[in-house]
Image (tube, rainbow, N blue to C red; front, side, top):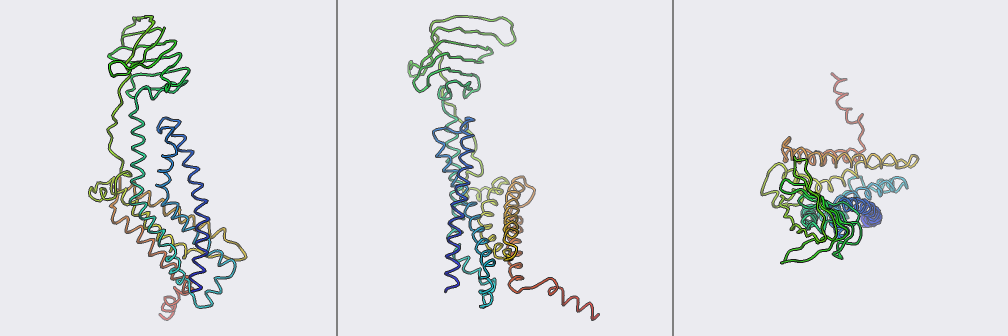
Length: 367
């Protein structure tokens, strides 16, 4: 049918252009944030692209949902501005008739959003958590960067190497500040290198000085050395529970604690919001050829932002135990669907408040 095919083709063009723009914006923002985390020592600098890829996978549901919403609003607004909507309405196609081609076009993306948010989202978050934990488990020497003061994994030592790279296993102007067994020590040397002794790594310092002090005592012990060896600490095992966003959806269902239910409500809410927003786009879109579509697009984006904020707010409320997740999910998304369908039906029948209140006014007048 000409009506369905023409509408789907225009939706496809608008969706493709919007997706490219939004993906570019989100990737730029993710790159800046990931580089900031790498500079702070939270992410391995060599794994920035990998972390950014996993992060982008986690944000794809939001990008696809917003692309669908903007594409639908933009397509319908253009039909109003170019007076094509008048032609379709005059030919007997009411506003509700647009729901079928829109859903027919959008159902692959809706399924993709559901799969991404229920399966890919926890997987990508678990991969990012694994990368960060592996980076946190690196040894003391791998933490050292030339020209920077770097704390050890145990927090008991601070290293500084002036020149050369730790990868070459040599360094110049080495400084170590340590606290161990009630003693504070500061060691400085002109150079140092890594050596393997009896299967353990040692940092061998050349031509330096060591200052020791017992905590709580004023006496200092100063010694000079030609060669001094310090054993490098072993890797630290980070034992931490996985965050709810890194757990599978099946595990969230099997363990219904508040934090897990909050995450589950967010995932289900993202999948349901993609469907509801298509109906909202049909109900809210209208444009005056003499005025333009700026106000219409602003209203649509405002509804989008408010809706998503309620989804995030519900996640925090359910996680804190303030509300039950089933009533909140049903109330928010079911109420949004009912309101949007009612709004669409009112616009389809071209009802006004005067017509809706007319029978009641006539009854009051006759009484």
